[in-house]
Image: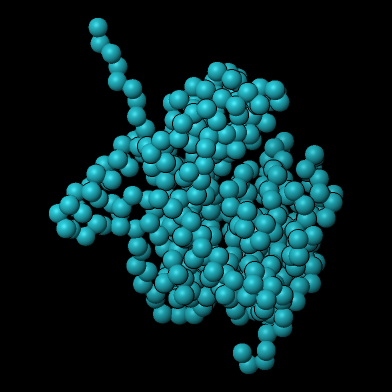
Length: 389
């Protein structure tokens, strides 16, 4: 009789090997490489299993997955492959068990049973290591080329990754920097987001970043960078995850929570209306234009959360269906302490990054976020830039 050995997630095996390497280095008096140090400051590392856990964390633990299967057999049955992956990037990073159950029409009483079952699953050291395996902390040396403003193009994704849109945006930002004489550095590593690195940049561009990508210390570094006067530009998928596990990011940096986009059809022509903004973003683009894309809707208008709206969607020009918002901002700015934040939900279709109006809008937004616009942010408020500054 041959017994099959239980399958151990690769992330768990790698975490154990790195831990053993670190112990061996310490025993021999050898400096431990950053890449070999056990990563212990990842978000949710110590959170007990529940329906609010990221789906990937449940899928990584055979006992947790079995408990969920027993309580609600239909939840994972015939789950689309891109929902149930455990190798990043994967959609299971940006779904909680609760959100997955809602999409799978799991009845409330079964969801209660799932939560009860998950809370009985012990959280082991191996589980914690597996959760942290999708983050990185290796120091990143970022050499700045000549030019100003100084920009970091950040492209780490652990959730949804649409390669064509990411590539199109990447090409646009690289070409835009070359055309304008900007200094542009590109990284897809969370280890680039440190206090020492960020002090060299006027703004950070998040290119369709999806999933929780920063450790707790990296989060702290980025939050402090923004509050002290840094700049942020986020496009499309950067604000389009079904579930977030960092409230500051969604509620303060972005200022709106994504709830979905139409699927029938997914891509539609829609009219974009430009509003007059003190920042100067949108100048020479009034009154707006029509283009085709995947149109995001949000839980509430960013305007209600203090955003200065740059562009809105004319909901009469396309079919939002149940995702109707009324006031429907699609691009806006926010002040985060002394920092400047710009977000645009436009950008799923690669062609959007060649649309002349949108290219101009992003060019103006990057200039503003880097501190070269008509306004600055002071203590959370947008104020006119002083003449000559």
